Image (tube, rainbow, N blue to C red; front, top):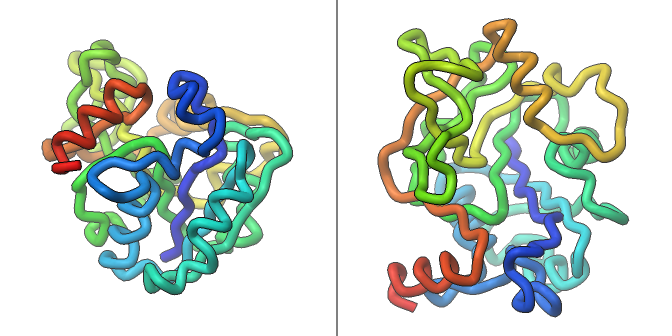
Length: 220
């Protein structure tokens, strides 16, 4: 299974750190954030990774190269301006191919084992949920007893930014700047999105304070 790392965000909340360095290359625990994903993907048996980029994207390509040192093949999907999640995926679909693929947000950190996720989803998507962090107490989606996700429910959890998708989720969606959430919500209403709850470590590295906290937690 191929994978995609979303790395095109501007990182406004990380400024001034991201004025001269793209957010995926910010370091914690002695590594760039994106390197943790690359190493986890290689350990899970993924062979090819597509990385999209926009802001300071040339620096990402210069830092990671062709992926050989991570035991991966890396291909890049440059965006003149960030296309948001669905738009970035749609642009990269020719490189991802027709089979289901794994997508990871470049600005999260987690110790979730990726190998068990590398399977075809029963529907159009399968998302990993986590407990709601303090900055997002309301969560995103509810997980039903049958494993299907819904927009509303007794208990909502936070989408981790890690999921498996079928290309059919993006069919008949025009290229361009497109968010992912409306596509997922529409598919949920049709019962075509499943999920699982991960109880291990996960962090949305969205601010300098959270980056420092992660660095300290990893012994940086």
